[in-house]
Image (cartoon, rainbow, N blue to C red):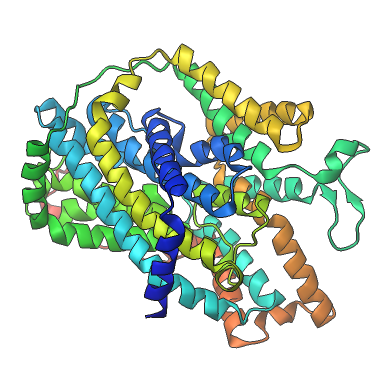
Length: 509
C-alpha cells in the first residue's frame, strides 16, 4: 500500500500543465528520433539533454524519459513501412511486420506493434513500482565493499552476457576507465592524465562524450551508407485499430512470455535487442503458426515488440534503485541525474521522493501518451523519411554542437565532441561496443572510490570482498561472469559430442 500511496503522490507531482506539455513534446521528439534510422533512444536523449539544463530535475527527467518512450515507439514505424529498423531491437519486427505491410495490412501491423509495445512497457513499469523500493531499501545496508562488488558485477556482466568478442568489450571498457580517470583525483586531490592541459583538469565530461560517440558517430556512419528511403504508405483509422485490438487477446500467452523475457533481459545488462530476438525465437518455436512466421504473422510482431519495450523500461530499475544503468540509454539518463545534482541509488528513494515517484508516474502517463501520439500521427512521421538525409544530417550536427558548447560554454568541448564522434564511428566500423565504454566512463570513478574506501577499511586486504555472505556471493558471481567466456568454451570441449544416429541412412559418398 505504501507504494500505491507514493505512486498517487507521484501523479500529483506530474499532473501539472507544464509537465503534461513537456511529456507530449518529449514523445513527439522521441518518435521523430526513433523514425530516423540509426539515431535511437540513447543518441536522442544524449543530444537533447542540454535542453533540460534550465528545468527542474522532475520536469527534465519527465521530458527525457518521454523522449525515450517516443524513440521506442518510433523504431517500429520504419521497420514495418520501410523494412529499415529504426533501432537495433526493431530488426525482429521487420520479419513479419514488413510482409504484413506488403500484404496491405500496414495499419494492422503498426497497431499491433504499438499496442504490444504499450503492454510490454506497462508490465515493466508495474514491476518497477513494486520492486524498486524493496531493492533500494535492501541496498541502504550496503557499505563500500558491497557497492564495489555490485559495480564489479555490472562490469563483469557486460563481459559474461554481452554479445560479441569479450576482448573487444574489455578493450572498450578499459578506454572508458582511462577517460574517467582524467582530471583531479577525488581522494588525494592530485592531477591525473592531464598532460599539462588546464582544460583537462575537470576531466572528460560525460555528456560531450556521449553526444560525440552516439550522435556524431551515427551521422558519419549514415553518411557513408548513403541512406535512401522507399517503402509502403501506412494509415491508421479507428476501424483498423478496433479490428486489430479484437484479435490481439488470443496472443496473450505470447505477450506474457515476451514481457517476462524482456523484464529479465532489461534488469540484467542483456538489453532490448537480445530480448526481442529471444522472444521472437520462442514464439516461433512454441506457436501453432510457427511455420508461417516470416510471412506476415501478427504474433511475429507481438513477441519482439513486447519484449523490447519491457526490456527498455525495466533497465531503469537498477539505475534508480542501485545507481547502476542497465542499458546505454539508462546510462545517459544517469548522467543527466548527476548533472542535475541528484545521486542515483537507494538514498534517492529517501531524499528525493517527489522526483522518484514523479518519474515512475510519468512512465505510466508517458507510455499512454506515446500510444495515443503514434496511433494518430503515423502518416506524418512516415513522411519525414521523404526528406533527403543530406538536409537532416547537418541539422542534427548543429544540434549536437550547440549541446556540447552549452555544457561549459567552451569551444574546446565542441572539438572534443567531434573527436569522440570519430572514435564512435571507428568503434562501429570495427564492431567494438560503445555501451561498455559509456558505462565505465559514468561509473569508473564511483567504482574506484568504493574500492579505495574498502581497501582503507580492510587495510589493503582484498578478502574484504568475501567478508560476508552478501558481498561474497556478489563478488563470486562477478568473477564467474568475467571468466564465463573461457568457462563456456572449456565446458563445450569437455562435453562429449553425441553419437550420430541412423548412420546407415547417411550417404556414403
